[in-house]
Amino acid sequence: MPSDELLLETQGSAVHLILNRADKANALTQQMWDALPGLVAHAQQTPGARVLVLRSVTDKVFSAGADVAEYRANAGSTEWGLANHRRVTAATQALADCSLATVARIAGPCAGGAVGLIAACDLRFASADALFAVPPTRLGLVYPQADTARLVDLIGPSATKRLLLTAARMDANWALRVGLIDEMVHLEDLDAALDQLVMQISGGAPISVRAMKRTVALAVNGLHDEDEETRALLTEALSHPDHREGTAAFLERRTPFFSE
Image (tube, rainbow, N blue to C red; front, top):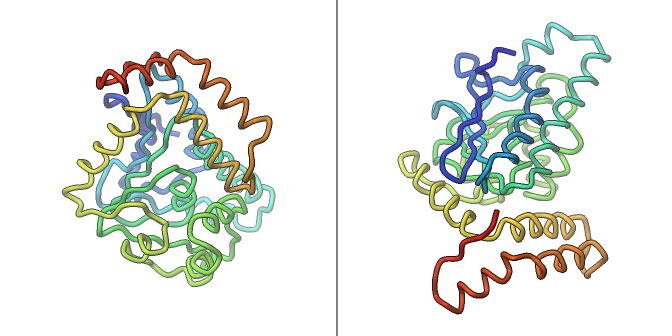
């Protein structure tokens, strides 16, 4: 993979993971899928990082998804197809497991495997001209199960079937209505909206953000009552210096200074 097809760029408390293959509509090659987990891990280790932003280098397109040229070159090879399926699943899982809050910044078309990437993020902010499509039925393929499950969790089975079975290009209004995106703004306002979100998240204690990402994931998986893991998360937070700092700052009406 050319070293500049995926970029990491730190902007304050946010680390931006940038899709930088604009001449190919940010189509994701097998090398790019392979590189994504390592880049997510690197972002998590960035000092002062609170948020990982997934974005495109251009506002003309977010991503065309997996590079179809590779599928054409390997058509008929179940070995390659299954291996690439595993690459895609590992990349989206890395985003889903990221300890930082993850936000997708979407402008322009977002298709195929890229929809799986944004579904793995915690939040999705999009411009009003964003478009969404999942075209495996046009390619004789099957969408990864992990990505399908995340879509069902986000938008329900009916809207997921509409995306998967029709391969239609759905606009940002539809995406907002069904819950595929959390915020829709005009393109010229997208960065300001994103900056505000990053600021809001970054104002919280990192230990709380990590723990509540996990408790939400547990709730999605059906956990409704406290268990050993959730009690351990609470115990860790209660004994952490950031809990004392947060309560003191609240009572003293000042901005907290968290340790991480």
